[in-house]
Length: 109
Image 1 (cartoon, rainbow, N blue to C red):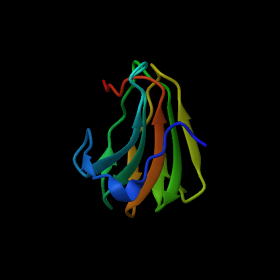
Image 2 (tube, rainbow, N blue to C red):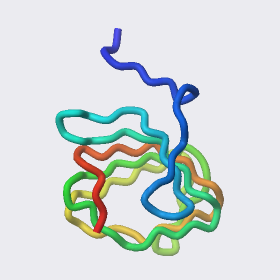
Image 3 (cartoon, rainbow, N blue to C red):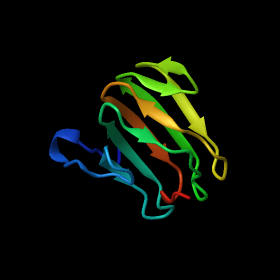
């Protein structure tokens, strides 16, 4: 049996770090500050280029259409951004839901 179980249906969406983004926290590490979240981007939301100075980011698109540098990505796409490296801008062409993990605190510059 897993030591930790989280049911999304028992959690609440909360405002994300940008307008048009909501987070549903599935797990937070008390040791590292890392997070595993569902992220919901409203259709038309643009996230500017940014850096996560304290965490690597891994994201897997569960649904929706996401645009990066003129390329449209859909469900089944995996992204990885090493900590300290700029990524984005991102554009949600439709509502997008991703499963995203940060291996350290979620900070943005």
